[in-house]
Picture 1: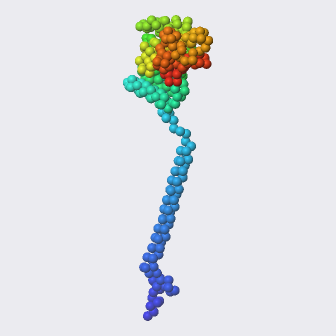
Picture 2 (picture 1 turned 30 degrees about the horizontal axis):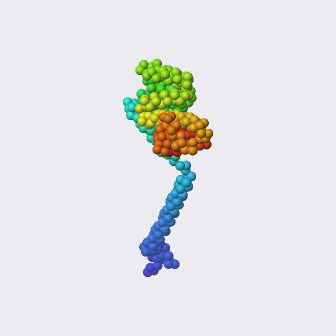
Picture 3 (picture 1 turned 180 degrees about the horizontal axis):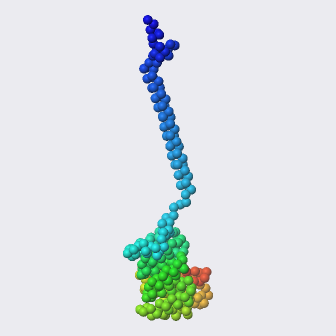
Length: 338
């Protein structure tokens, strides 16, 4: 019996050693799986490298942008107004008072931060160098939400003119339209025009305010003085005296007191100049020290310290200016130079 013929060509053991048993098939499958695993690991490694490269590039780009990004403006939030005043009034519904207070506090914070960032001297009525750009709009929002918000009008009348005079006039004009029986608003408007040297317009504002029921008699008197002597020290004294008496804000009252002291100092320096002129006419020279002229200074009603130096309203001694034979403010004086 021929066993080789019985296997036939399709039998497991083929001629030439090409027979494949179960072990060979298993090895072939294992080899395929190993190749697939290596391919997956290579793909995963490439993806990981791509992710790492992307992160490195993003980090570098972020540092590059940060290095070239302009400095953040700490006042940007105060200088962006997203709605018009009348829109804010409609949106606040029954909470107009609370919204007005919020805008008012933002106004004070805005000015306070500008003051804190500024290096130098300034006065409440001269903040032009502080870069305050949006105070008028903030105050307009406050008064649109609460048209009877007198503190906002008072603050705006004093602070706004040096920043944006027309915005100050608009603010007080709105207040007058909303509160036609409030004479103090005419006082604020007259002050704004007086500061600008618009004495006729200031006089008209005081005259209009004087006609309101309950207005004090000095409103009419100031109107007449504006037309006749608007730029005189006497009118300035009257203006700041009335501001001091009527102010509800401590800062405004402090400003008025400071300006009154400045006017007192100007009057004192004028009297000192007269005393020094009399001394020079008699002695043929300016005094070498205050002590030489002390009897004349005391007779003129000036306050002197122990060394015979005349004192300004802040109790700082005046400096004897030998070149001009006059008096000037000491560097430690709290009296404004202008």
